Image 1: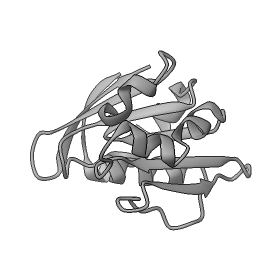
Image 2 (image 1 turned 30 degrees about the horizontal axis):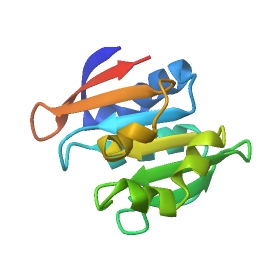
Image 3 (image 1 turned 180 degrees about the vertical axis):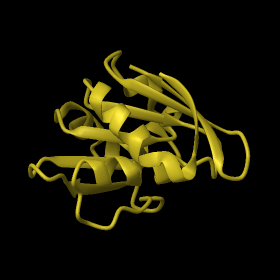
Length: 136
């Protein structure tokens, strides 16, 4: 799926992504400030997450519960300094858990990822417009 959207149109974009989301791992690649966390908030909202969704910039991972009681993990690996640091937080257990994992800055753990994942690329087109490519 490739589409351009306004930030006000995130709900249908999130619905389309969820409809095609088959693998638990979702990688979000985009420059700083492009809207990775904003998209994750929209995805969580559509999945029925009632908790406040925020970027785990310093904790590296947040967990949420969806409307079915399933756990979702949200990673922000921007401040990750090494693969060893990722291993220290037990990232392999998260990735192997079968739970949905939404990962910002996934290139920092690329050697730890299997081939079973979805990838989203976000490109800013203007102040309130983005281009999204979803590899389903």
